[in-house]
Structure formats: structure tokens, C-alpha cells
Image 1 (cartoon, one colour):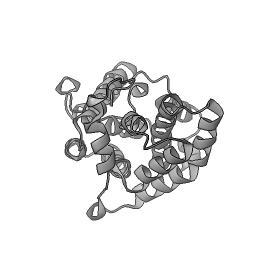
Image 2 (spheres, rainbow, N blue to C red):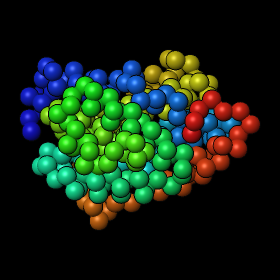
Image 3 (spheres, one colour):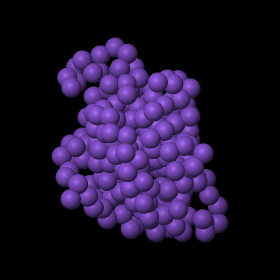
Length: 234
């Protein structure tokens, strides 16, 4: 698919809408373990946060999430409806912490319902994954389906998804560490090469090399509920 054509006009606007912080899926309410790490003084500054995010993109669960999005996108284009169900179930099984799984399902359910309202023609692709009332449709899966259905370039969709994920964590760091807004934007700009690298690696990653090392994040999320005070849900 030609990216210049795919990102022209309406398709670009739809990609921006998907990646917008105004998308009503509740991403802002999650820190994905950052709150635990900051409380324990394991992420005391912008440099620590940068390193943590880069590692998650390179070897953590986000690496696999992006790779699964590639498979989902291709299955939605084909379309291969059984593959959509398979990869949605696979991604649910990947979650090492209950908070991370519930986050993915809650955000996925919110986007699922929003897309059905915005574009009812997407229903067959979404329903192949399961009903949102099952609490088992992952956000990354729904995002990839939306990008494929709207004929958005695959790489652009992955870049936007990872950029949104990084932006959310940087914003959490701005509140928790705390960082200034300028420091947060400087950090986000500096993470652009890592986002692009993670995108290209996800597209090229063969299924027999699917693997991740995200136990640090998993433990941080598992112990999040024991914090004395909490601003975030994970």
C-alpha cells in the first residue's frame, strides 16, 4: 500500500483521531507500573524514565503488542476472521499482570463501542474477536482493525500507536516524578528514534521469534494495589 496515498486527506485525519489524547478510552488513567517505580524511587528523573521506556519498546511486552498488531492488521485486510480471534486471545494470554490485562480490555471495549457507533460497517471485523461485554477485546487489536478498515498505512498506524503509548507514559512521569512540561516534551522528542526502531522491528519480526522480557513491569503492576496512595489505575 502506498503510504502517500494511504495517509492523504481523510485517512490522515482518521489516524490523527485514533491517536488523539481526546479518544475516550481512558488511557490517561493508567501508568503501567510507573507509579510503583516512582514511589519506590526507582525512576527518580527523566533519564530513568527514558531508559525504562526504551527497554519496554526494545524487549518488553510492548514489542510483542506491536508485532501482534501487524498480524491483526494483515488478517483484517485479508480478511481472515479466525486469525483475528486467535491473536486477540493470544494477546490476552500474554498479559503477566491482572492490572495490565484489565487495562487492555477496558480500553479495547471502549474503542470497540466507539467504532461501532462511528462506522457500523466495521462490525464484522470487531465481532470476530468477541463481544465487548466479554471484557476480552484488547485495545491494540481494536486499534489495528480500525487502521486496516480505514485503509491507513500499516507502518503509520504502528508509529501512531506506539507514540500514543509513549506520550501517555511521559505524561504520567510529568505528574509523578514530577517533570516539567518542557522536560516531558524534550523526552518525548528524544524517544522518537526508539519508537521508529520498535515499529520497524515489529513489522519484520517472525512469529517464531515472539518473545519478551517484561517481568519488571509485571511486578510493578502486581504490587501497585499495595501502594498507600494511588493516582493511577495501574
